[in-house]
Length: 96
Image 1 (cartoon, rainbow, N blue to C red):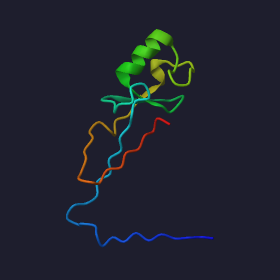
Image 2 (image 1 turned 180 degrees about the vertical axis):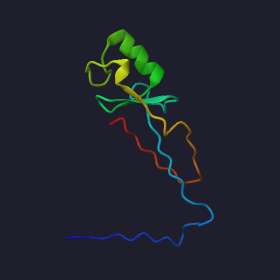
Image 3 (image 1 turned 120 degrees about the horizontal axis):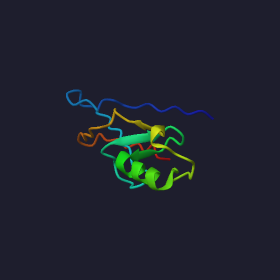
Image 4 (image 1 turned 90 degrees about the vertical axis):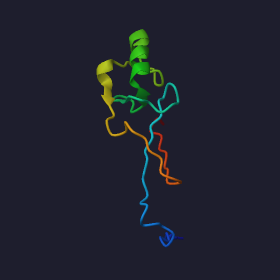
């Protein structure tokens, strides 16, 4: 059986648009990273300083155990500033 859902927008205040905040969490610390990077191999998000230290000491991804090099890290430039607007907050963790 198919169902459909309709969202009523009569309660939306047009003077205050909804703001979407996407927040990443470091797979090592569990905290939002100040300088987020993503592993090109695993797709995990890390705080740059923590993952670089881990790679230097171990040479692997701390979650998957796969060989990892600093050159495998890609900076995430889209989320350097987090802003919360009233109750309009959506938190998305890309850390798996």
